[in-house]
Amino acid sequence: MALRSVLLASVLATASLASVIDLDIKVRNGYRTIEVDLGTPGGPYDLLFDTGSATLWVVDEDCNDGCPNVSGYTRHKYSPTSTGTYLGVADSIAYTGGTIDGFGASDILSIPGTNVSYRQTFAVATASTWSALGADGFLGLGSSTIAFKNTTAPFEQMMQDGLLDKPRFAIYQGTGVSTTSQPNPVNNGVFTFGGSHEDIYADGEFQWIQMESPFEVYKTGFHGVQGHNITADGKNQSGQLLNWYGDVVFDTGASSISISESHIDEVYAMTPFSYADLLNGYRPLCSEFNDTWSVSFTVGFSGEAATFTLTGDQLAVPGYVDDDHCFPPFNSWNSENTILGQHWMQNFYMVFDFGSFDPESYNIRLGIAPLKKEYRHRA
Ligand SMILES: *[C@@H]1O[C@H](CO)[C@@H](O)[C@H](O)[C@H]1NC(C)=O
Ligand SMILES: *[C@@H]1O[C@H](CO)[C@@H](O)[C@H](O)[C@H]1NC(C)=O
Ligand SMILES: *[C@@H]1O[C@H](CO)[C@@H](O)[C@H](O)[C@H]1NC(C)=O
Ligand SMILES: *[C@@H]1O[C@H](CO)[C@@H](O)[C@H](O)[C@H]1NC(C)=O
Ligand SMILES: *[C@@H]1O[C@H](CO)[C@@H](O)[C@H](O)[C@H]1NC(C)=O
Ligand SMILES: *[C@@H]1O[C@H](CO)[C@@H](O)[C@H](O)[C@H]1NC(C)=O
Image (cartoon, rainbow, N blue to C red; front, side, top):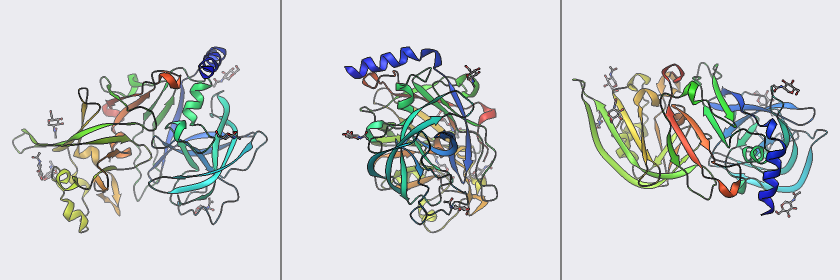
């Protein structure tokens, strides 16, 4: 009850400041980041935006041996500023790709090029196994309920501080592709807090997918996949529908598409590649990824599920040892659930809409639309 009135008051008090905030997306070693300032005086931090976790973290100024760095990128480390305070709590986060340990802190977060500035809690890492991360830390976009002890997720904090025009964020990942020869390509991606730009990027309407509640990360039902081939005489031939049920997580912090080990052979049978050959060291040529074959994914709650199709060329990710070879399009993992990472999401304009600024009234849906031709990524 009290929370609801506090929210309402802050939204009204700052309504005239509510913004749509557009941030450039950078690509470095395949990691996609956005830049925010932390502290007074502020300093820029490039943070991996991660829909699969909920914490903002940066590296402590004194973390050296505990925070190994093989990224080729000099990290901007955090030291207390005139507006910074420590919360006196310690915690750790175990991600699928690494872990951090650290303590809680609070400081002013400002968005460069705007007047948006507010107090944000975050974690300062005193140990991190993210040695290859080409970024200064993470900006988690999941729920505060799963964030580092005593910290809030930045997007939810901005909503509760009345800083945003609409309860949504939207992502156009951009056309930049990190390759062996060019790890830090120019990119034209845009991350939007408080609004979305489907008029610019989307080719057609969004298909809306309801997310599971209670909200932790962006998760819904998974129904299965189907392959199609264009035959020599131009016919579109459908393969068998491969059904299995589990959850699917839309995770910008994951690069690839992860599929249950119990179905990985059958999914690869829809492509020109055999999983057994890949395990024996076969490296796909990027030229094998073309639009004569496609794989369709069906996601959402039963009764309102939607199907999204990616052609071979949309699944191509060069740089598997060299630029002529592309990464295998699917990874296998030990779960019936599916993870759709960057390599899937970079083919769509995606809006993450909460339906309400009030956590008690969230109705979280993802709007997913194909990109206009000029905005599609080029492998
Ligand atoms: C990270 O790597 C870069 C480049 O190798 C190096 O200059 C830097 O000192 C390393 N360490 C940190 C903490 O940034
Ligand atoms: C951290 O969270 C605990 C449990 O909710 C609370 O008792 C404590 O006061 C919080 N500490 C700070 C510094 O906010
Ligand atoms: C920031 O605020 C000042 C003063 O209100 C205004 O003149 C300026 O246009 C604002 N800048 C941005 C980027 O909104
Ligand atoms: C498409 O062709 C590949 C060979 O390139 C084959 O392995 C696969 O089974 C075919 N899929 C369908 C749906 O016909
Ligand atoms: C498309 O890729 C398939 C599978 O790698 C290959 O057999 C076919 O020749 C390619 N077609 C064109 C037009 O490149
Ligand atoms: C074949 O048809 C399916 C179903 O209409 C479509 O989703 C898919 O994109 C087509 N496949 C190719 C390779 O164009």
